[in-house]
Length: 228
Image (cartoon, rainbow, N blue to C red; front, side, top):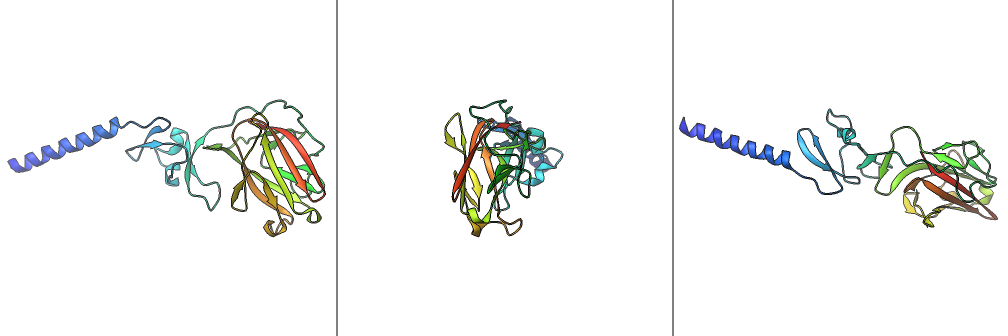
């Protein structure tokens, strides 16, 4: 009997020590301490994650995180649930000769090149607002889906977007590749709708941006503001 009691007492001490250690666990700077399934975890943007914890009783969203992948070929990682800052009401040189119309989707441009961002477009097409739904910020910013339409006779085309305050081009991911200038070639276009390309653009912050579109025989530019 004494042996059994001693063993039980030792087990209780070990369990108590483990529970105390878990409760006292500290997370490094830049991460958030969370409790999921009774276990303390340190959460940070960009780390591998399990989508199961988006829906559990104690979940990632409880700590303002969400587990997702930007594309089907990307791994699941943690994003911060956060909206970008307000879209500036004006920018230097805002607007262009691009018009708010497109052949097969809501967008802006002029023949033969249009762009369709998955953003709320003001009537003058110069303020592009991030949606009201689930807003996910990665380490590099907010990823927004863009469609590009270029008439067949004008291919190939090239697009880039520059942040005005820094003068730096921002990332565009298309055809499985990340770059600062997306080239639109017939071989990489969607089968349907025809002459259309998909991508996502990563905005590091709310602010003023310039989109430059080029094609065989012409070009146009558009200065716009991005934010909530």
